[in-house]
Image 1 (cartoon, rainbow, N blue to C red):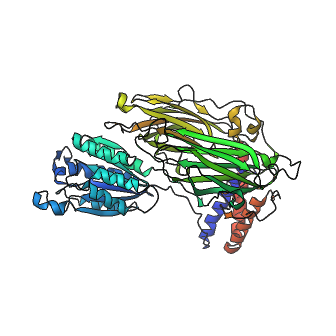
Image 2: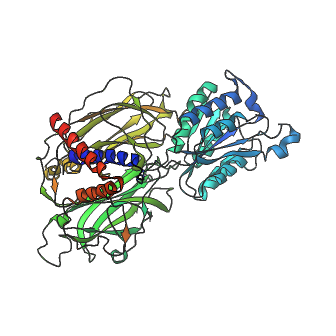
Image 3: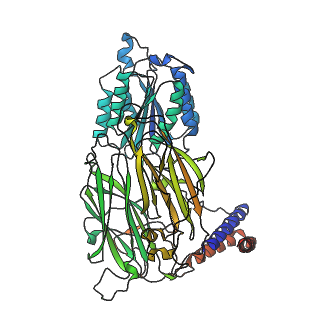
Length: 636
């Protein structure tokens, strides 16, 4: 069944469901994945000094406007809380004892409630002292006990209540192993306050930003808080790999979540039918760590494949990353075609269908990296083909520079929450130093993409503003197709520096082509683009946001693609991932599934629903399919 026909049937089924709902039959809604943002606490300075004048009225007035600007534009699924200090007492010496304990959590970091947050900040009165260290502890306590978390603190001065020293509190939180990043904003601060706020941020791998006045704060706070939400969040069905193949869990296609330790070897298995191609990848996001030297800033993960009896199949891959302390997400990925090869000898467990195991080893470790990190594991199985479809593509698509101001998008902090780019065009985003963001483009068989990234000037020139910048293109198994790097100094910088990154038209036969990248462009699905701005580890003006422009060309004519020997549920979208200690397939590896089984399931479901709704639905569904197919043929 072609992709076009499948879409037509899907549209017809959706329309039929609409009529069924009118007939009074309840149809369960499909579960939708929502982006997972890092829960974030805003800490707002409400000390007496915030009553100083500002063009907005007072500095407190400007801060409230800035908070509203962020709240009004924050993603609906984000979890944002608010804490303040200095609202409950005056700022005289007589008030100090009470004022240095005066921290209030006005709103917990729950799913975004714009009205409640707006009302809470509107009621804040600036009066008292500046207990930043105490506020930092209480904000951290209000956040969830696990997973990535963020705090954004706005202050117009240094702590006036130490101890506890806020820089020491930030270091203490990080030393406890909390996956927490603190970003600080200095609102018209002096050198002493700037140094303290910078120390706090850098202790957690976060960023410090200057805001000279209310207008600057209104521009800065929404951007800093949005970037705090964009921490990489590893997701997947839980699975626990083991140190030996004979005890390893066996998975079906899907996305899984495990952990891996430094210098550890870990195994996972999968059953691969005869003639099928398997895909496996592991993705690790390394946390931001301040003060790591270039030589000590490298991580390497190695992959090997083994047969059912533990035989080494001599299939090896590795991936390394430098500048890991910038918060880089790294994937090691491999296509595995041994099941497509005929097994001449029964003892050769590295050919033909059967059970195989993949091993990952975290081999080289950068300084300051935690002992264990989450790792996303992607398993996929592509059936064999009876007809591979069109011949391999000869060359990549031609890049076309786009025009106009561009469509604003907000890149996601991981593959799973990558921002959708619906087609060719110009897109714009703002990326902060230390961020690594993702976008995705869906390519059907026969389609291709090319793109170029322009890092715009941010006005912060000079040697103190030098950052590493990088962009990369990935295929559906997160395997890197190509990349380019450069240095950013505050001026306009275009990457790739000499040519656009591009794919050939996506065809099954590309895996047999001579062109090195072509075998990476042999699977229809989501293709990913990453954009990175590295941290520059300076103390002044170092974290000014960088405007990013992405020009994207999507071309090629959609094709029917290969004809598979069985249902092509490659990534497990239909059945969902599952885990077992034995073969999870419920059938002999290599036994074919009826090629029309997807159609049969869909038709059976529709017939059952139609029976409940009445025969009229069957008639309507059939008419819709006929009309849609006819229209499709006319367009061709």
